[in-house]
Length: 414
Image (tube, rainbow, N blue to C red):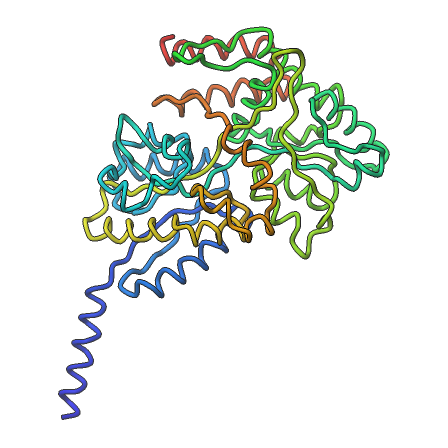
């Protein structure tokens, strides 16, 4: 009898292990992103004991992450099963992503922000599900602005320069920190200056229009922030999001350009600037064409087309869970990453934890996309190289913009 019981137990363990599906997913680790994801996966696996999810942490640099994906997918690897995709990547990676068009209702995509659904639609096919959305924002020390007689954040770039010079000099801290390293984040920052100055890189037909006086002025202004106005340190040319965030959060900068995730960290219990931070739209550029502009960011979840059918079904369950209203609210409150589901913005818990997400809702809805093209990786690389060369004074702004125009026309044929 005892022998039969042992045999039955072994068979049961074997059967259970045989029925378990193990899938892998990639994730960034900016801010509390990874910590929050692990908590969510713990709950998912509790609800789905037949699925085990293993996380593959990715570099903070989206450029490095992109290159890893190219390596995985070009080799036909079945791992990772679930890919965390930058909002600009679907057109490039579409051939390697599972077609989710027939799962439109399963994921309730009619309840998502229309712009986020558009970002995962390639040639009429849904190739991913929007996970969280982003837009560039201006963080500022509201206590310091008040101390020096300012009753509102800067509305224009000129106002930011004036405030940053006055306060940083008096306080002995940096004036303005942002993302100036040669990586995708620099493209996001550069686009915001270009748009705010009233121009663009491509027109609506995909023609290259970057070589114009407004674009040159926008890049010159970025350079002047470092060398003329001296409100941004020369080291900003090496900064990514977390570099800027750490300087600002330790109380060593007046202003910062960053994404929404930084809010919860800046106001955490151990933050030296807790309760002293404000958020506003990024300033307008000069002249009648100057406007507030924010780069559309955000990340989506796609499924590796090379994964097995069983892994794909498990991946769909995971994505449905992570993009549910309940989990998006949890992510927004605890990781400071904006929901892609419309109804989450009506939740009182969101307004209490991150009021700016509700108050600046129009900024997120009207954020502008980076150049949308299947050749985006090459376009981004060109922008990074020439803008960074100007920031490090290897090229003048005029030279950088001129050479950028020539390379983009060669890449795009327009």
